[in-house]
Image (cartoon, rainbow, N blue to C red; front, side):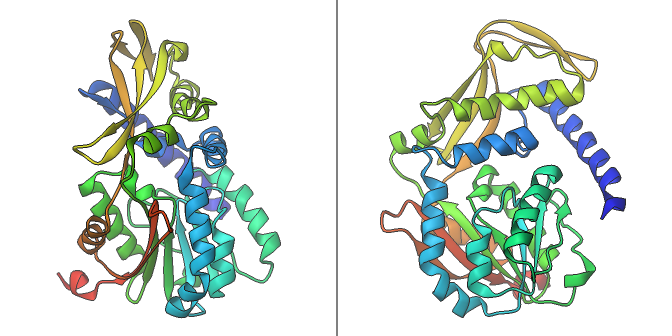
Length: 323
């Protein structure tokens, strides 16, 4: 594994730089949400999942526990679990306990944070082969040779698919389809559309943790790309966009600012901002259409009693692959 760390880290830095420079230069300004997750960002996100306003994590976790038996019956034993964007892997033990996998492969762009989580999982599942991969899962990933010939179950919890637009979501699902191969299955979480107050509070909590998470993106730019962004000149804003069925997060300038990133000058006027995240919400029909467009045939759907969150099980679409 050590032989892969240096080139992957360099590639990640280059991609981060390119996305930030492009995002600050375009109008409206926007930086992809995947760059939230350096080590500090990952830690802040884990803190968000514990907040009373943030319903997705506890709702999905409870739902996974409730459907464990049904899930095990449909998936069967012996599959290699490949988790995309594993983070702290807090929901992963529920799945691993339920289906008795042959191996576990977490994939995450934040390598340090992922490896710390892997140590905890290894202690809990000492007989399970765990093979972490530091990579950007938004493109096809070459999986470890140890699981090449094993049947696979992709695991994509947390409604992360909602962070992408329709075209990007479809591309990511197709990339997962390509990575996992024939005979694969996919277990994926998707957030439901619900009351605006519930949604906006979940992304703008009273304690300000989500604001710190959003602002950490600017701090990361300063740390890693030689930025001089005055972070205190920006404020976090979360708003529901009903036309697009999504929560949007922005960083709005409270005064005129000038700064450099990677020796390139930028200026943002008071009231202007940077669009940092979308979190799309899906009805059942919308979610199924998205999965099919990405090369997956839905075979099961579960939701909590309040219909706040849904989990889908899908199988690789062989007809789509032939196209």
